[in-house]
Structure formats: structure tokens, C-alpha cells
Length: 431
Image (tube, rainbow, N blue to C red; front, side, top):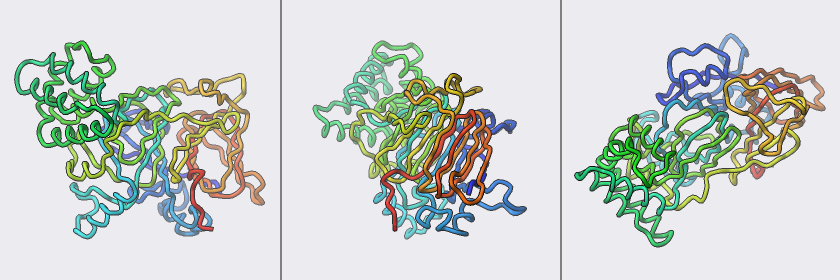
């Protein structure tokens, strides 16, 4: 079945006021609109569009006929989102599966209410995630080589006025001394503990005071990021900790993958994101929300991440896929149109496939061994189920979404840019 689904964007403070309304073709409501959730996560399940006078969610649909609409008779192991990032997200990390199970069971046994400010685990699942840029996106993603961070901390310390702030920056640089990777991991852990235990505030204030002058030894992109973070969160230890992380600038169509336990924060832009179906977040700064330093240190992976970027693979003309090494999800992108033309776009940057060699196709065939969630981000796509005894056909305009049950393949045609989420190729089957 091809079933239209919809949802109301979540109004987090970091959301853009116009990006998601533009995508969805609705008027802005004056509030920040951060995330559009397209899945059956109980935190904000998608609803079946125009299903009945009473709202019916994707949870209701799957539970009504789990073998027909679910994944191996169960709920979706993935969640598709569209992000409109108008301000930096909190510096955060997500648990792996065993950590989430232990943390959830512990908080349940302690009677911490789900939704309470001090609650860290709303579910027992891990949360690896993949993000593909629709516009230019900037992000802090995973720990970079420690020597790079130390060099910039020293430059900032030298530029700072004598006093507590400069001393704090010098101390942070001292904590970043390491001869090898095991020592680097210990050094990062030490700096995290020190920053979250009060040492990061003076350093963050000193950073805010010196970055306006553009001290030598710190790159322009890094300076710009530090200025923006300092202006939004003066004195927050996350400003200091951001120096430990890769600063990534994604062009439209480029992607990052962050496995569980990797510290990160998205800073700006519009993107499609797919993740394991979880909402577990441990925060390290850049936020007014709850920060639990002890639990963060239990969760975080302090090893060096070579690169957070993830390239797509070409499945067919007009069709590419990002498949990280997790079974929960993969993300596909289909670009359909006349081969000599480019897909239409109006405001989301250069949504072009030529750079990756995928190009355009007049039509694209997609297998449906498991359910898929589809969203059109440009143009209009015709979706047809192939080989079905009953006619299944849908016309999906920009901003509209479909839930596609498992079954015969679908064919996409028209002139559009479309993303589709489903389980990973290594998803285990119960059969």
C-alpha cells in the first residue's frame, strides 16, 4: 500500500522559522520549526493523511496489521527526519545498544518519569545517525586529531588577556598533550571532565573575548564557528569543547555518519536525517537543558574519528544510497527527470547529482523487501507499484511523504528529488 503520511514539525529553540514551512508549502507560524519526524517513534508518530475523522497514527496502522505494515511484524527500526537548523544544536552524544538498555532499565527501576528534565533514556535503543545536506550544512562531528586542537588552544591562550580566562585556556592546552592515540583518548576524557566540572566556563568566556580579533593560528572557519557559539552560549563549556571536534562544511548532497557514542552538534543548514528509532541524548553543552557529566563520560567514545563523511554508492542511474555499517537503516536518493535537464529546486541549494556521478533518470525502480518512508524535497514524483494485482499509484508533490508497505517493487517517474529510508541491507530477518 502507498499511504500518505504527515506530521507537525517539532518547535525546538534551534529550529529555523522558515525552512520547513518552505519545504512543506505552508505559511510560517512565527515559531522555530526544527524537525519533521516521519516514522512511528512514540515521541511524535506520523499520522495517516486524511485517513478518517479521528486521527490515526503510523503506530496504529502497523499495530492493526503488523505482518502487512511492520518490519518483520514489529515497529520500524529507523526514523526519518528533515531538519531546519536555524541555530546550533546542543553538543551531544547517543548511547550504543548495551548502554541504552542498561541506562533505560536503571532509570525505570529508579522511577524517574519519562519526560522528566533529569531523564537521560526514553527508550532502550541506540541512535547512530546519518545526515545528508539539502543546503550548505555546518557541523561539529567527532574528535579530530588532538594536536590540531592543542595548537589552536595555544593560539587562543596567547591572544587572551592575562587572568583567569587566559590561564584556563593554557590549562586546556596543557590537558591536550598526548604522545599517542591511547594517551589522546585519556587526554580528551580529562579535558571533558575538567570543562564540565567548572573549568570550561572561564575558558569559554576568554574565547568569546579574543575571537573577534581573529588571532593568528586559528582558521577562519573555526573562528567563525567560535564567534557564533560564543554569542549564542557565552560561558558555556561547549564552546571550549567544540575545539576538540571536526568542523565540517557539507555541500548539498554530501553526508556525515555518526555512530553511537560520538560527540557532535549540527550548527546550521537544512538536511535529511535517518537514524535508529531512538530519542536518547546525553548533552555536553551549548544548551539550557539537563547535562549529566557522569553519565556523559560513561557513554562517550574519546577516540579519534578519521573523518565523519560518508560517500554514497550508485545503485542505478538516478539512484544512490548511503549504507553505514548498521542494520537499522539506509537512505536512498532518487533524482528523476529528463536526462538533459536538471531537477527543479527553489531554495535548497544546488541539489544536483552530477558531482556524484549518479545523474538523472527518466524513471527509477526501487525494491520493497521491507517498508520504506519517502519524502519529495523537490518537484513531483509519480509512485507506482509494479506487478501488483491491485492498482497502487500516488502522485507526491514537494513536501509530501508516503509510507510504502513491503511488497512488489515501486517505480518512480516524473521530475523530482526524492529521499527514501528503509532498513539496512544487513537487517536480520526472523523468517
